[in-house]
Every structure is written in structure tokens, then in C-alpha cells.
Amino acid sequence: MLTRKASEIKASEITDKTLYLARRQFLRTASTTALAVATAGVAPGLLTSGVAAQTGGNVLEARKSLYSTEEALTPYKDVTHYNNFYELSTDKYAPAQLAKTLRATPWSVVVEGEIAKPAVYHLEDVLRPHTLEERIYRLRCVEGWSMVIPWIGVPLGEVIKRFEPTSKAKYVAFTTLYDPEQLPGQRRAVLTWPYVEGLRMDEAMHPLTILAVGLYGEVLPNQNGAPLRLVVPWKYGFKSVKSIVKIRFVEEQPVTTWMATAPQEYGFYSNVNPDVPHPRWSQAHERRIGEFAKRPTLPFNGYADQVAHLYAGMDLQKYF
Amino acid sequence: MRQTLWRPWLLKPGVFGASLIPLAVLAWQAVTDNLGANPIKEITEQTGLWTLRFVLITLTITPARRLTGWNRLIQLRRMLGLFAFFYDGLHFLTYVWLDQFFVVPEILADVVARPFITVGFLSFVLLIPLAVTSTTKMIKRLGGMWWQRLHRLVYGIAVGGVVHYLWLVKADVQSPLTYGGLVALLLGYRVWAASRRRRQPVHMPRRQATLRT
Image (cartoon, rainbow over all chains, first blue to last red; front, side):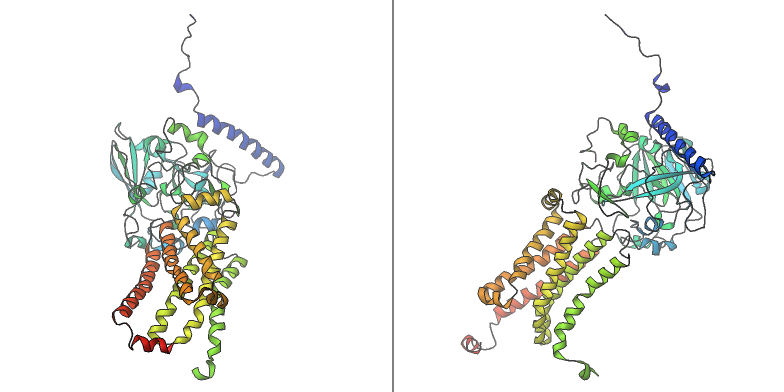
């Protein structure tokens, strides 16, 4: 009988799929960049800053990332004036007008639950050890529209490692600021305030998941969830909770705000999935803001290569 | 001043012109690129809201006439009802053309699977016979009683419009409930008026009443 020795390469030595895909992407980007440099003769801000700031104020320096898409960006005006931020208003055009009441500085974040050292951090201390990165991601709203946004932030996983979660930390729950003075939409009980969202630990640790502090080369405008928000590009937009004041590590799957509001319509995972329609609208297509015709929606919002393995063996019709 | 400006014949063309303002505003916004980040959604929402508003305005005519005694208002009812149909047609066209781009299987799937679209579609379909039978000729052909019975469909259409709106919003039900309240008020008035007519039949003997008609 032919017996085969187990592979001598340890599993830990095999390159992670997301990494090698990223490398390929890097080679492609590098060759195009080299070409661009050769032809233009200049390399403006190569690898140190990405999309130029739009308003000229509060510029953030950020490193480019291989996780960025090369798709055309949604205009700054639309990114910052078409917002679902119910804490301000349920009208998408209103947050840009109302957001000035939100005081984004100073800002502190409670970090608690199943971690070594629960504490209250100043926002600066959460970010300090990390290098800001620009991540140009697709954003798919559950309502059937999408954008391409150049976020600036840090990988959530790297931040979480510093908090030293215990083995009991199976999920992370994020809470938005509750203060009707600053967030006047909270005066009406449209949702149960404060807004709570959550991720499974492996989702939170995934390199695509970031804590964003800026977009379009500058500090996050208030209406986009200043000063600290989550961005999980393979999930519907509402998972990317805004204006975070609390990060809690827990053993049980947290009940998120939308799950509590309409459990048959919003699941915990809420991965972008063209095959699981929302009871009130199909998710097969989306309208990219600025485009006329709809385009097909991709599984995991086009990030399936990087994240589908997180859900291997799960019935995505059931765990929607 | 009022006497010099006011001419009774101005009422109908004036209301006609005013009823076209929402369309003019939409057209102007479209031309000047002021429909916002999601223009198709904006057009869908605006035409939908104006449909509902015109249904409500049409339903207001009878109570307003009874309460104010200003009978001339009845001249406006058909036109306002047709404007409801007009905006509903635009609403429907926006959906099948701009939103779904005439992809019939997707539209049919939507109508069957999404209750809010089912109700909206049904309300639109029910408006068609009312628009078709709105001409004086059709009223005569149907006869007043049957015509009136048919046109009571508008009560269901108003409720359908509100349900359509209520079921499509994600969480903030304030606006659809406001319209719902107005529909309840307008339909409630009719129930109240009908029960009053039943309790105190007519101020004069029935025989005399028929003589007068």
C-alpha cells in the first residue's frame, strides 16, 4: 500500500490566500505605476498619499494599500451628502446639514469585555501605534445602491491585538454615541438607540476590516460617522457602524439594532449576497451612484476571494 | 382687489396649471442636475408622493364642498383625479423604465414577491378603469349609480397607496403614517356622513325629495 508522508510544510507556512492575491495585485499595480512613472517622469506622492484631499482642510497622510480597488471613485459630494445616518436624520441629504452639532473632538472609546485590560482610550491612543492606510472600497447599501469610497483608517485586527482579547472573546460589539443633543435624530425612536453592530471575531480580525478616521484624503466629515467608524466592505453598509464610543468583546453573538428592529429582514451576518433577497427588494442588482443602468451585485460585494472562506460550510440562505 | 382679480372661470385652468408644478420642478431639477446623488430614486419618490397627494386632494373635494357649501369645487374633482392617475403613470413608468429598464422577468418577480410592489401595482391598475370611465360619455353609458359604485374603488386605492408607502420604508414610518391618518380622516368623514344620512333620512319627505330631482 502506498503511504504518503504528511506534507513537511506546516500549515502556518503556507501563504494565506488573501496575501498571495494581494501580492499579485501588487505586482500588477507596481507594473502600472512603473509605467506611469516612466511616461510621466514624476511620481507624485507615490505610496505615501493617495486620493487628494477635497476641501483642503484636515489633510491626513496615508499609505496606499493593495486592498484598494481601482474602480472609479464616487464623487466627494455624493459620498458626503448622501448618507444613511439615522442618528441625524432618516433623510439621506439631511445629515450633511445637521452634522455640525456632533462634537468629534475630543473623543474617547470604551474598550471592555473579554480582554486583558479594559480601559477608556482617547481616540489618539487607539490610533497612535498604527500607520494610516488608504483603502478604496466598494460600499453596498442594503437599499440597492453602491459607492466607491477612498477611506483612510487602520486595520481593526491590528488594533484588536493590542487589546489582548481572551479566549472567550468570540464576537465584538460596537456602539454608536448616544446623545440627542449632538445627534438630534435620536430624539425620535426610529430605531432603538444607541445603535449596536457586531462582528464575529474572525470577521473583525480580517485584514479587509478597518476602523476608518477619514475619507478622500482628509479627516472623516461628521456626517460620515466621525471621528471613528467601522468599514466592512463585504457586508451591507449598515454593518459599518458610525461614531463608535464603545467596543465590547463578548462570548455570545450580540443582537444588533437592525436585527432587533426586523429580524426577518436583517441577519447578524448581512454579507452582500445577490442570491438572498431582502423581503422588500431584490439584491441581485445595484445602482452605482453616478451611473444610470444597474449593475449586477457580486457575492460578498466582490470580495469573495478574500472572505468567502470565513463562511465555508455555512448555509448563507439561513445565516443571511 | 379680490373682486377685480377673481374670475370664476379662472378656477379650473388655475388648478390645472398648479397641478403641473410638481412635474415642472422635477423636470427643472433633472435639466439642472439637481436631483441629488440618486436621481432615479428621487423621481420615483416624488412621483409616488404626488400620486398619493392628488388622491388625497381628490378625496377632499366632497367633504370640502359639503362643509363650505362651495359647490363649484365639484368642477375640479375629475381633473384632480386624472392628475393622480397622471402622476401614478409617471411613477409606474419610472419604475419599469428608469429603474428596471423593462426587464420584464425582474418586474414580474418584484410584483409577485415584494408585497409593497404588489400593493402599489394593484392600486395603479385599479386607477385605470377610473381614468377610462371619467369622461361624461362614460358616466352616461354606465349610469350614475354604477359609475359611482365603480369609482368608490378610489377608497381602496387610497388605502393601497398608504400601505405601499408604509411597507417600503425601512424604519421611519412617520411620513406614511401621516398620510395614513389623512386617509383615515377622509374615509372616516364618509362613514360618518353615511350613518348620519341613514339616521335622519332626509330633511323633507322622501316623495318630495324625488320630485325635486
